Amino acid sequence: MTDVLPDYTNLKQLIFRRLEERYDSLIDQFQSSNHDLKEYLVEDALRDQNLCVSTTRLVFDLMNFRKNSRVPAKLILLGYVTITNDSISLNGDLKSAFRGKGIDYKALPAMKIGRLCVDDRYKKRHIGKLILLYCIRKAVYLNQNAACRFITLDAKRNPQPDTDSLHFYRRYGFDVLPHKDKNKDELMKQQTGETPMYMDIYHIAKKALKLKDVD
Ligand SMILES: CC(C)(COP(=O)(O)OP(=O)(O)OC[C@H]1O[C@@H](n2cnc3c(N)ncnc32)[C@H](O)[C@@H]1OP(=O)(O)O)[C@@H](O)C(=O)NCCC(=O)NCCS
Image (tube, rainbow, N blue to C red; front, top):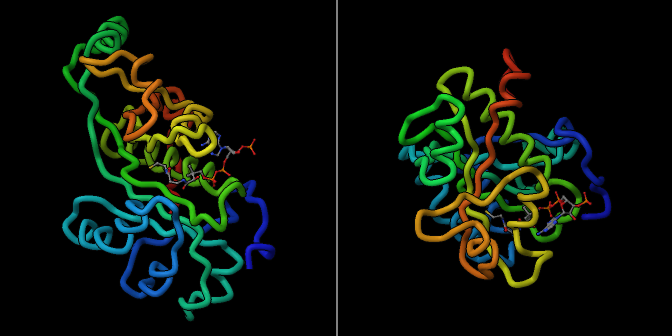
């Protein structure tokens, strides 16, 4: 099955659908070595969505979705992303950097990528990268309606660099969010747990006024 799927180069090759009960059988078959991320999708994502705490989008291959959308059992679930709203408290260096830009608030609005996971069988096909691109578009669109300055997330850490998601996010412009008790270098060295990261979308948002929503 994996051989029929391409390497993804364009967001248009993917389709994002809001989580619904009718996708339950696909969700049961979703494979991730990260048990928390599989468990969240199976047990909590729909409940959180119904409680207006977060929304989850399931990610499909467009061609496979067109052929099989009436028969969910035949769909290939490539990954998922859970999004919610957030804010960043401006402390230390970040506070002075923003004060220098004429922004003197205690906190600024953000969109948070609460969970992002690609099925183990479909990793390394640029699906994760395109899901991130989708999230950036969502944040820019959100900014047009209710201001949003940052994207935030908690990167899952792993002692092995190729499965340490911090390096994946750094590749695409996310930076470690300094904490009042721990500086950036200490947070980078961490090998387990989660490291808060952020991306300032100001320049992207300025270039992309009047963007249409992605789905
Ligand atoms: C992290 C994750 C989302 C990446 O998804 P993916 O679809 O396998 O990654 P992509 O194919 O889009 O990777 C894009 C590029 O980043 C690289 N990359 C992927 N993971 C990387 C990592 N951990 N460190 C450095 N680079 C990485 C890829 O090699 C690829 O490079 P290339 O363009 O030179 O070929 C996926 O591995 C995953 O779901 N991991 C488990 C859950 C997790 O950690 N989620 C994030 C925390 S919430």
